[in-house]
Image 1 (cartoon, rainbow, N blue to C red):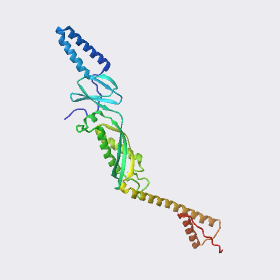
Image 2: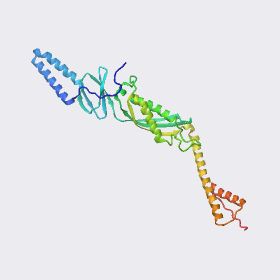
Image 3: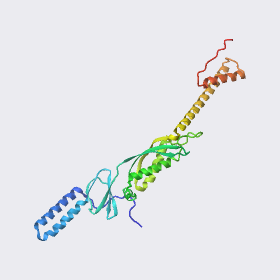
Length: 295
């Protein structure tokens, strides 16, 4: 069983200031040159000093802000170093530089089926960065040219399809106002999408800082039909409001007439008046009054 570490740890090996190490190596080169000049028995120590100085030149590393190096000693993971500056390390260590900077990925709109089976186009943008350098270096197979960004793009596509398939694009007929939809539940959908992406990308040590939908529309083949449906729903809703208001106004008018004893209405005249008022209040066109001049 492999007993290697499975998570990032800080490098705790020998670390020397790079400028101090450079001065020391220059001293070694000077000592080696002096030994060659003395000749005789000093040639062999001079050769050794020169070889040591040459090998030591391979131990210099320089790190910028938000950059790290993963250090290996003959294939064994020794730790990750992220201290900014110029340093000298064991020259027999091999290193891999890893960027810890923030990355942006814009997922182009893809066609998916929502909860009720309607094809929709949905896209998103996410912000991510490397959190665990061990996982991104050793748990991700890069032998076939795959990069962390490519892995993030594939998993983002899969997560977007999974989340979009759980909700309808818009409220269904007869559904309550509390129904969560892709169009109305922006904040909750984004939070769920972010959680799903973090769950999928944790295996390679990547952290998603933000994920949000940036495009949402019906697919072209049903867009016209759905537009007419939305228009019909809007018209029905508007009619309901108009009728509700008209009934309230008619009731108020009848109550006021009877209360002030303006006119006495029997059932037939009351029904005729209600009908006329509803036609006037609910009609699309302006009413044209007819005045009976025979009275």
